[in-house]
Image (cartoon, rainbow over all chains, first blue to last red; front, side):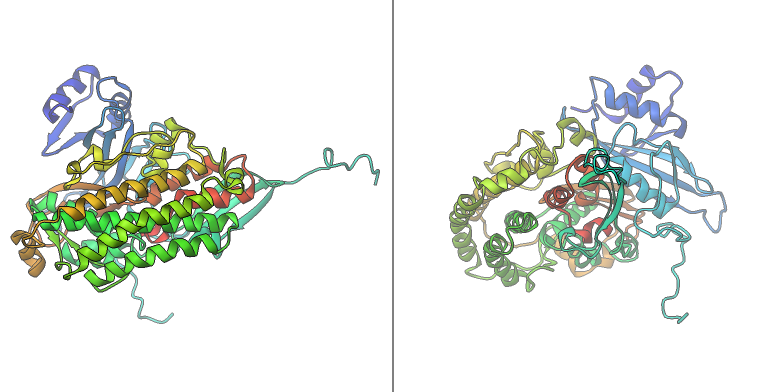
Length: 160
Length: 382
């Protein structure tokens, strides 16, 4: 069985010096600089063996129009273990919304390849180290990222 | 030219880049493969899609939780029932809604019937791709149509069922429906025997599919492949068993596994899965209890969608859909609309390793490898 998130956080911080994690409800928040180290440990350690990346997506938090601030862009990972049959473990990486960049996990899990391309396409997050980062659902040359909360769809009733 | 210099071995060759699709019957929709060929051998393959993209997720974030159900029908349009079920489970998890006992039984029956529909259709199409043109597909569609009649009787629509809801199902099934379903399910193994007699040991099928498009076990896990494709590669991972969601732990069934992970295994695992689904259906149809088809909380939610404000938080609900893991990721900010609504579509993720399976194979094999992945573009493009 999977330990509680607090135990998991303590175990990870012991194993990986310099890494600090935060537990937020049912989610483990990872700093973007630590993502690769944390994921590699979760995947390879005998205790956890998270060999299966089920889902990868992003959530956009635009700046509050009243309070200001820069807003944030979260990338969310859902990990399971096929070998140990436990999960899910939800990881979140919080990025700045202006230029969101995070390390790609495709070198660890091939299953991230298309899902990272989708997040790049629809949210505009750049994944460092991705082998083939191109738009996947929208066409080449499309401007903007349609899943961002402040995206304004074009008016299709106008003839032009 | 010197005739000796231009034999097949020494003649200079060039790589040829061609497009398979998007308007091509073997691509199962508007799907394109940019293939680089050396003679007939594939040296590079890049899938291109998005032609059906309508930003389903953005539509979902602009409507109530319940209003997304008709849209989920159009994701994997062969399996409306299981798409509904996936979303219903995620909403139940997010909002703490329990399902009624009768509702649970009806949902499992619908989803397993859907699995039969999907697997007969995909094996039929796969044989079509192999050149067994028409006949096996029509045998398969004859059986599919019987089940679609059942869906029409309970939901009013053959394919766009929009039937499963959080807490149960939208309407109870009509009288006599269960008896009709029992008759069709009991008759189904006869069809499978006939289908197998014609196909499983067929020499042409064995020649075409064995050792073609092999997907090794470790790569399958690493590439997040799920569903019959994963199990054909020999990985024992069925979410019905692993998560034990809904009432699946009450039923006896096996998880069929392949050994090689080639196209033949993927075909045969699906045939065996249909036999297991028949077992689940027979057990479920025997035990359907009385009572309401939807729990009071679910009914309140369906009747007044705007009153449903799940607490702030998030939920990831997943089911074993016929094509693999279908996941719904919902983030609530306490309003009647989801703040984030994401679909983890099995066909989309399973396409990741299409190139790996096709490299070194002949171009004619790419068609059946794609057929054995079992994609529906409504779900890939969303």
